[in-house]
Length: 113
Image (cartoon, rainbow, N blue to C red; front, top):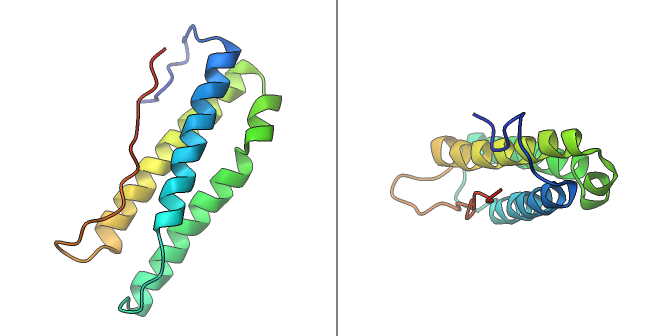
């Protein structure tokens, strides 16, 4: 289910605001995903995989790019940012975090229309 429905009634400015907020949350998550000494090769490899996905998504949806998109594209990019951030947090929990270890979870704030 997308964060922003295809039939939304959001203004272009609100879409830009939502996208910028989601981009900031994606950056926060990426910054928390650091290699630790005790990680084995498989965990390090998985960490670099998810960091790569987050970094590529961040570059694709940079603030400048968001401002240049039409409203429909802004909604699509906002949905992508939301989905990738959630997947990144889940991927970390499933494949990288040690049992019982707290893991970074971005404060996903669902923007109000």
